[in-house]
Length: 111
Image (cartoon, rainbow, N blue to C red):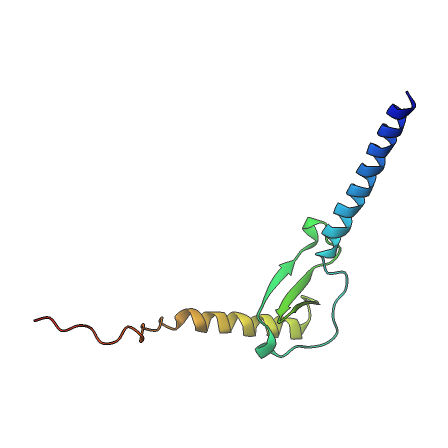
């Protein structure tokens, strides 16, 4: 009888620990505060938008930089300029026609 109580207690403790771990990993993917530094558009690789709808505490723009992510205030003028710069860069890239394959050499002559 004592082993059943110990097993039940171990199961309850495991569930509490697992629940805490899941909550902490989920909140780690949310911005908790804004960075105060401004980033040059050339360094930015992209961005995502965080909203408070999905259990995050603040709305934020998450800029993607090489090797890290930076949280920015979406109402800030500098954040909006950086987003506009990235959007314009993306539009320009999508308008560039794909390069032809130059390594295949000239087309064979038909005889």
